[in-house]
Amino acid sequence: MSIEKTLGVALTLLFLADIFPTVLYARAGAGLLAPGWNWGMWPPPRGIAGLAGGRRGTVRSIAGPLIVVSLIGASVL
Image (tube, rainbow, N blue to C red; front, top):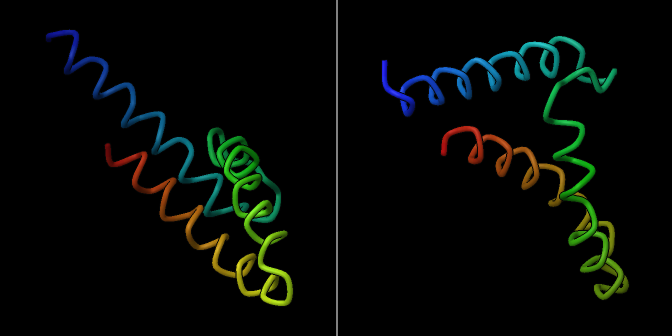
């Protein structure tokens, strides 16, 4: 098996290992990658929300789903 296939299988297994605890124990922050990803992705929406003034809640309510979509996109790549 080539190095590319080995790395691909390893990354797939890593993302699968992250999906199960994230989905099954979503409130416990039990995922392998998702808690760190979420922590790293929050500063930009928080900064934008600070500039949004009265629409701060709207910006923050959109940020959560965008972070989830970005995590899924990262796992697909």
